Length: 635
Image 1 (tube, rainbow, N blue to C red):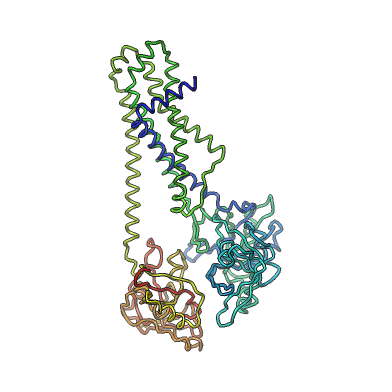
Image 2: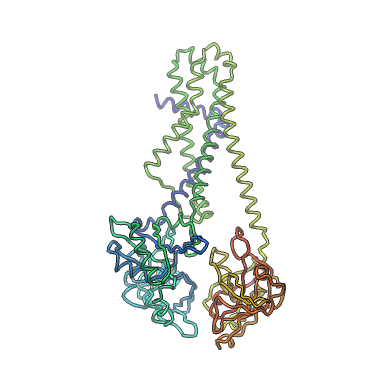
């Protein structure tokens, strides 16, 4: 009997192929879109799942309260907390810290590579799990010059050859090179908030730089993210949090508050400026996409039901013939429902196939590596949903038309408004959803057009930034780059690309004496630059001159830093002509004085959502680790 109903359903599809294709494909595309969104949402919720102890790992967040009562949170705090937590809290199984993510360059033979590396303490791999490709990452603690590479970096250096046991050279500038021995290679999962090319122990930096040793002993230095791994069956209680906060307050002599962020919350539930993580997600985006998926699947289901109901009106005579030949109402109900269910399940199979077909394109757009997989519980819900849609779409012919008198059926059915009211209701809901989606699409296109055509105040076409780590012999390096006929100009600088990538640094407080002899101050963002920076980025100089750096004077320790401020800074300073003014504060050497030599037109160096902040461009040799060149032909 089931086989008979299946054949009848297929015969119906074949008989009205065009109508059935429209009927089914609309539902197929809707389900495929919903499946893709579902896979993306699940992917977002499964960050950090590669850590078997993710539920016991917490990141320490330092909260500071300003005089105005505003609370700001920062993932960077004192690295000394890790050792204190290990010693003073028995419920803490292990603690570790992760230093700043820094750009550097390593050499193996004649191959140089720029990369991101991190400095960690010896317990890092006791807290976090990264799939081991080769060697033993735990050996990082057995030697100060040991290094662990990511699988991607190891392949760039050595191809398919073993990397463990080999050496790479770290360029220390004018201090020469240091040898690093590879002890392990790990795979860095995409769904980890910790992304790196290499990991080196803190002891290595302590050995090569006495200043780092001194800073490592200071509680006031916030240059690391601290993590704690609690023992099984324990958690961070409110009393523990208070006691842990007191440790930091005691050593810094200021009131400090700490909170502990679960590892799995870092990706989606970080609601403060966190420049340490580049692959942040957003719960707002999750909710938005879930709503979008629901609207799409509802619209597809309503369209499927509407077309099924409309087509049923053409089958009055068929119903009359079946009744005259002895068909019972129960038989007709089963037939109509089975036809709708067969079409619904055909739609499901086609939707799954379409989803698999679209996944590679979807992954490229969303920068993911999602595969089509689901748990049995999810499949049960999907099947139940398909059964529900199939029953709903077949309910009108099954329960209403099957009850029609044969004589009325032969005349083309009753002229009442029951069917029309149902179809009009479904169409109304469908049009509301469609119009809503069209409006949202229009808003998205408007935003994209704004982003593509917004005048940022700086040159963005044919401009390439590359980290080199160089801050010595810069002029010679620039001249080599300029030998390329396609390169128009070269500049050494830093920070601006960090700001554009989401760095939300609060900037430096600079002070000056106004015309009345009173001291005033202003917080400004610092952008490291050299003399060619303004020209390379196409900034418009409104007053004064560009930067003319003198490295010799700089290293004498009495350097009067030349700086260029933007128009926002000039307006905030309330000075008509700031050229020649002296300001102090922020970063510097020796007397730490700065002299304003120019004013540039405002340019966007942060999110377009933010108002352009006061900023200054300053020369500092050791900060010029990134070079930017402008291409003349786009090659």
